[in-house]
Amino acid sequence: MAMDMRTCDAELALVNQDFGDRHWQTRAVHLERYGQIKALLGLDNRLRDTRKALIGAYFCHEYSYAGAALTNPSIAPHPDQSGMEGGAVRVVLSMRAVGEGHISSIAFRVGILTPDGELQLLVEPRVAMAAHACNPPPEGVPAGPVRACRYEEASLSGTVIFPFTQAQRNGLEDLRMVHFHPDNGEPVWYGTYTAYSGAAIASEMLVTRDFQDFELLPMTGTAARNKGMALFPRKIGGRFAMIGRQDGENIWYLTSDDLLDWNDGEVIVKPKFPWELVQVGNCGSPIEIDEGWLLLTHGVGAMRKYAVGAMLLDKEDPTRVISRMTAPLISPSDENREGYVPNVVYTCGAMALGRMLFIPYGVADSSIAFCSVDIDELLSEMV
Picture 1 (tube, one colour):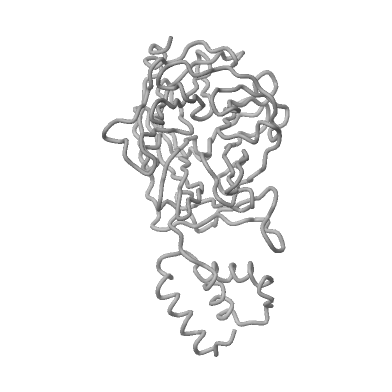
Picture 2 (cartoon, rainbow, N blue to C red; picture 1 turned 90 degrees about the horizontal axis):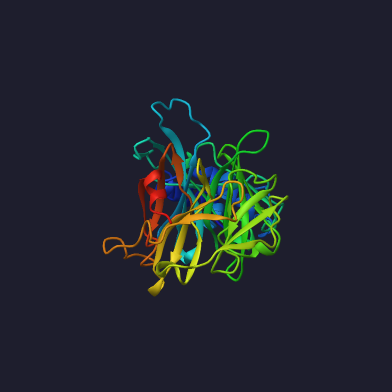
């Protein structure tokens, strides 16, 4: 505020010289930031835009959102399937990205998946833009539901959803996307994720119909105080259904008439085999196939080694386990055990394309790999 306008103009020009070519709409971001903090600083709008932009720049910084880790992906069909031929499907990948301070955010990539299991990822922009709150409070930090919007200039592959609320302030973790088909109406994409405040965890729900606007909704109930909830892609017996890990050890089945309120539930799977004796849980939403519900699982064994397995649940009564793998489907190997969190392979959701199951999975919290498996062969490995 004490700068003369000549100094102010020169300093803003230097900022623009350093960062103008690295980001879209740098000036708009700086002015938006000024709008967010002006009341806290006791400022008003009787300032030139140059001074507002420079003040905003002093309260901004670049952030490498995946500088520490990139992991735990899930996959779902893209809302736009125009131009797809030969059985190919346009898909959306979600990823957990971890940056400085171990703050987790949700990142996306768009790609095309072919029936033979080949994934062609669209080009990722050099820099990403954080989704912004479409309905920000007059001042302060929002406490409840948040509607986040993607900037029109940003592609989905260049969009990141950062924490907005106090409950999320240290991270949005492990989004489990699912393409949900309601009894009537248009399909919608839901995603359960863990909100971490730095002291407590809670399950929340992401809702979108177009991957342009996103509702981030807190969940209530005793079950929502835990991690790892995954929604079935349609109602079961007229009720919403979830797979959860309410006690940190076993797989639970939960139902509710309210998408955002979850309580009670029952244990349907306990650790049984050596590779999962410490803990067993879901690896994303169940996938409906002719034979039943195909559920990918994670198991934790000796030396905290995470592996991915699978089981088949009854289509009409998902509490009944028809069969399960006795050994892991994907396990850390010497080639992929080192990383930010060693000895871990993990996925938050796979996708069936015909009789092919496509699985994106995190490797040691440091990279994401992909594999495909024939569903008939997978079922034959279960007992």
